[in-house]
Amino acid sequence: MVKRCTRVSVRLLAVPRHGYTGFLVFGPTKCPRCSSRDTVKIVYGAVTPRSKLQAAAGQIRLGGAPSDPERPNRHCRTCANEWETALSRSMRSASPPGA
Figure 1 (cartoon, rainbow, N blue to C red):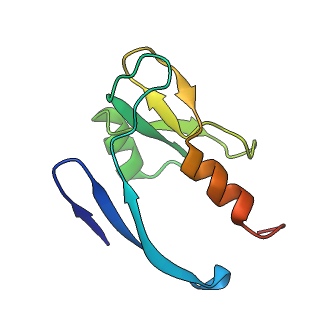
Figure 2 (cartoon, one colour):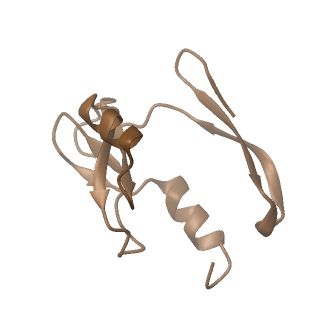
């Protein structure tokens, strides 16, 4: 469930295998290089018809196969910088080994 507000998205996160249910708050992500807020999520894995449409509309960037665990998850449309957000790093380090 995603409820959109003016500048912040709130998602209900239910991950039963990790034993956590709660709310995460995502604000607009600024580029660490140019401080632009014109950034999009990088999506890895199989390309679906929906992801093709979102990529064509500029809502996401397709990242290819998910081979590297430390891959970037945000792309700046202003300066083309790609980086991994702190939230992504913390969630990766909190997940149990082999998950």
